[in-house]
Amino acid sequence: MAVSATLAGTVAAQTTATESSPPLRFDAVTQTAGNTVQTVPLTLDEAQRIALDNNPLLLSARSEADATAGSYMQAGARPNPEVSFLQEGFKSAERTSTGLLSQRIELAGQRSYRLDAASYARQGALASLDGRVAILHADVSTAFYGVLFAQKTVELARDSADIATRSAQLVQRRATAGKVSPVEATRAQVAATEAQIALTSANAFVSATRVKLASTMGIPDLTNRVVTGDAEALQVPIGLSALQQRIEDSPAARRAFAEIGRSNAILSLERARRTPDITVSAGMKRIVAGGISSNQAVVGISIPLPIFDTNRGAVIEARHRAEKASSDRDGALAQMRMDIAQAYASYDAASSEARRLKSEVLPAARQALDATSRGFDLGKFGFIDVLDAQRTLFQTRSQYLKALIAARQAYADLERLVGNIELASSLSPSAQP
Image (tube, rainbow, N blue to C red):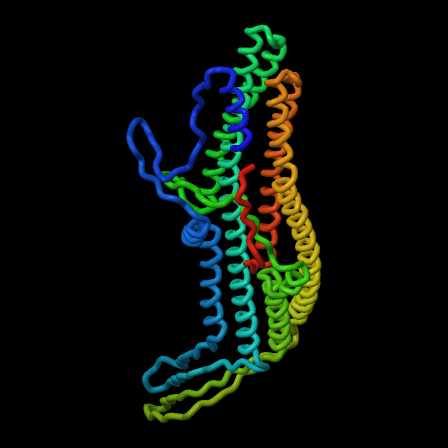
């Protein structure tokens, strides 16, 4: 990077340049115990596809949606006919045998209401499935960029460690020559040690983020897979007003509307059940009297008397549950409007901060470190000034990454709320922090 190159050139002008470890890279080939292990890049699109096939929560939601197809089929089934046989008397010369075929007939449109309720339940399950897909898409995106940001943190930490190490070597040489105080050499060594500790922590954090990404995708690990992508590309969603207009098409809103329809259908069904079903029967009676047999046709009808059970309690329950579903929908839509506004504001603030840090603050911090390092070489500044410039640059880099992470998180929150977001543009800064 620019600052590292400038400082390295300054050091080399006065002392013998020391060999530093190469920058951390994430190539398609890694070395393990002297053997070349081929690795395959993992992009965000591929990670999303793998998650769709393997994430257990999504597979569960898909199974639930498939199950509702059977519920709808069963809701349309009509009552089965019944066959009955009645024997009166067991003597061959004196007996009566009756065979009946009975069919219960549902009245007041009960089958239609059952089908409506099952249909709305299926719509709700499909909306839940879409919601789970949106959540998984956002979770995978968050975990994927978490790995990219962790890798970027390692790169920055390694660069910072190189700068701090070279500065410590330079100050140590100048202290040995009696040009600066040994105290400054100690400060430089402390700064170099802190930078190495930060690099070690960053390397450990990369492993943790890779485990999280693999778990989110539903696979055991990311062996031989290298996460690749642009960690600094900021996607810009459509405007806030357009997002608010899409609330009613979001999975959560569709699920709430489906629940209202299902509750109303159940209420209608319970009201219809207050009308008793009738059962019609037809059959044949064979009568044997005095050894002489004769046959008679038999027809009948059966109607329950709604005296004790009028289904009133079920109607009251269904009515209140329908009212609850309507209130839940209103509350869910209001909460979504507030959450979308907050997530959009967070994204706007974080993305604006990242752009300003990249375009204004980071270049100034680089220039300040460059100027301070040159001034220190000329004896115009103390090393404490160089340390302050280094800390400012390191902190600015860290702040820039935090702003990018916050922007990504807010964008993922928008995806969870409204599903896939149409992109208006894509910002891909080319300069490195």
